[in-house]
Length: 536
Image (cartoon, rainbow, N blue to C red):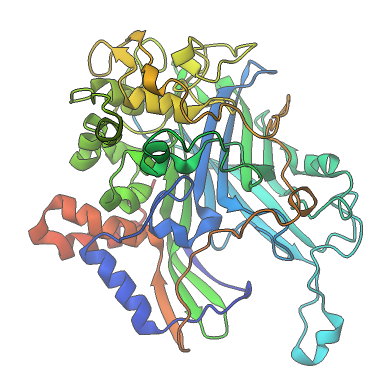
């Protein structure tokens, strides 16, 4: 799809010198970018684009409607409550697309793509300098009791389109309200009711949601500080407590996402941007070109702690069907870095490679649990929809004997950090690559994990299950500022910034193909991205 648009200025100086942008794009063609990564900020390039940065994906059989599955994808990491007056709007349909993808037959290709796109209705007058006295900066100018309240000045709407494997598109709901940001108790005294406006009924019998939520991921992020401080002293604090995310969610009939008697589905989320963004000195931005994939997420923490730095950006632009063809990716699954670090720090012997157990957990699913009959190895969540929900979920999921939990899909209550740390340390035994589960042996020195075993807010009992977001009233400025990125401001004129996905695949994937063809390979991937052949 060809796209060309111009968006309003969102605030701040966005002008860059043309030479700077060209230099950035060129450097990506000849080598990987250098940067830091942490949870929710898994790759250097996506740090610059938080509104389309996937944070987590969840897939589970709905606990109160066992004939349906619930799929959730979150974005905009480390969103600080009370960051008015602009808050965290969704990128609009002319600049981004948000996707939840479902593989129904194990071939690593999306059989159903549920595309969310957003539009904005800004009721604040766009005034000239001379008319400034008639303008306002407010998100709302009075108490907001409903989405239709005239005091709510900034509104967004979402459309959900189902895209079949053959490209056929079916609009399931159009221009449904997005639940507004939670400004505070004075502005929105009954926010729980107000958030219900973000729920809509779909033409296929399903339900959708778009809006704000408290970040459901819980962990102590100091795992990145030499695995909890090199002496296990840095544990017990939920780093994400108090932060929000942008959430899209679907509750769909199981028979809408399964096919041919196969109960196991693969689930992942992606975001797409037009391939080229031009930023002018006056702050306006123009988008042009075909949509390309700039972010991807399936299993939690894979891009953070399994994929090496040089592959993180290309991984975000890679479709799952190509995972098994990337030797570096497969090698890091078979020979992960974390156990080596743990052995160095704590003397716990790293399991010998190659790690067939991790290949099974991350790429094929476990035979007899969540592996489809004809599976193509690929990184995604895999959910067996025939396993009913557990009345009393065990946060350790399958490791705790609860087969309805991670790595069989992922529920909101699953303690995926502790589960994956145990898995990386060899707690899961399988009978060969892609085999069945033969036992679980908890690694006792790390049995307590990060000492964060539940979320800081209780989840809901009905769709969308996510906890209500925090507001400025809740935190009263106790948190820091939202990590943001972006192209540095420059000295005027216009500059062309090639979209993240085109550049992401260019450098490192070209390097994987061979040093001699590095630049040529980078250009090839860039062209393929623009032609829509790489991003799926």
